[in-house]
Amino acid sequence: MHSNASDIPVQSPGSPAPAPLSADAQDALKIVVVGGFGVGKTTMVGAVSEIRPLSTEEVMTEASVGVDDPSRVRSKTTTTAAFDFGRITITEDKILYLFGAPGQERFWFLWDQLFAGSLGAVVLVDPRRVEESWYAIDRLEAHGTPFVVAINRFEAGPGLDALREALDLSEGVPLVECDARSRDDCKAVLISLVRHLNDLYAPSPAREGTP
Amino acid sequence: MNPRPIDREDPDRLYTVTGGRSRSDEGIFDSVTLIVSECEPKAGMQSEHMRILRMCERPTAVVEISATLGMPVSVVTILLRDLLDMGRITVRHPSSSVADAQAHTPAPETLKQVLDALQRL
Ligand SMILES: Nc1nc2c(ncn2[C@@H]2O[C@H](COP(=O)(O)OP(=O)(O)OP(=O)(O)O)[C@@H](O)[C@H]2O)c(=O)[nH]1
Ligand SMILES: [Mg+2]
Image 1 (spheres, each protein chain N blue to C red):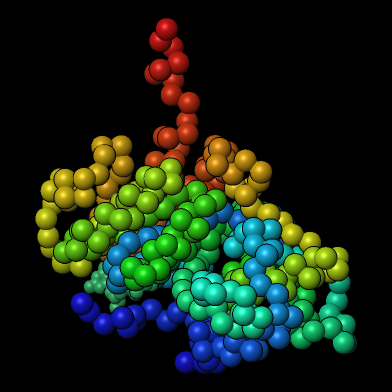
Image 2 (image 1 turned 60 degrees about the vertical axis):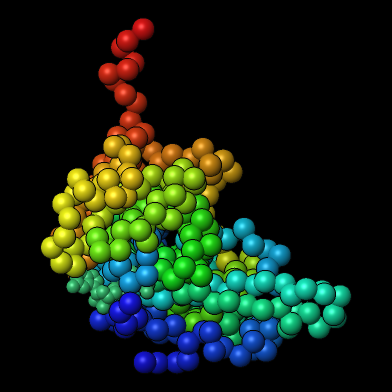
């Protein structure tokens, strides 16, 4: 494994508020970036965000056994999971939030919560550790959240066909390559996701005409 | 790096901030629900409430409030629930969180707008 240190300056909690949204902002949309530990999720969010990625935390509470203890509020065990996010202005009244899900396995249970209400997801894959993406793909399919898979090219490796097979990816799911540090690449990944959504939701004219 | 990370936040302090309540209000606020202040912060208000009211003069998403205050989303939503009950804020829920969220698919027009915005980036 490699170090957890990221070169991306994620703003620490309690930092000054980023530039405010338009007064007309009404509707916030979400896209989630998931994938194994250290595959470049935070890097991708930072590459396309209009603000420095912010970090926020969710405290998950697990009630301890033997709950009749009157002081039980304090005896619950809590786990804190950090996730980071950035944003992109869409129109005067719409904003897109990009969430980088926490990659460590012990936080994977949080992902479903992030998928809820999101337009779709990007599964970011380190081609040297393909198997760490299987779980993300499984969860997205189970949840019915549309997604694309993006190979973060840390170094030259297997071609896309071989990777599609290793990922056991169905034909309908777009598979693209990127360098998560490149704004243009990440932009292209998001565009491929939105095109995919368009294809999924557009009424199919080919089928409509046939009896 | 700056203040202390939240995971080292004193649990007693978070307990005080929320009046000891826990997460019964979960679900009212989505992580990207936009919050808008409906009044000025006034002397005598809880300091976190004042900070939220100041921050939300323009619409601000729950996660941004959480990041700026350095408090977990679950704590922020408890504070927001109080402000909402007192009529001090209004909320703009994301269209994806409306009643029938499972069946919700984005409007084609929304997707077009997202595509245009991404292409302009
Ligand atoms: N060479 C190379 N390094 C990259 C690339 N993308 C990310 N990195 C580096 O890989 C490390 C991990 O990137 P992060 O963006 O923090 O990964 P993450 O997926 O957010 O990690 P977790 O949140 O801990 O799961 C950082 O040091 C990045 O600078 C890439 O495309 N090429
Ligand atoms: Mg990360």
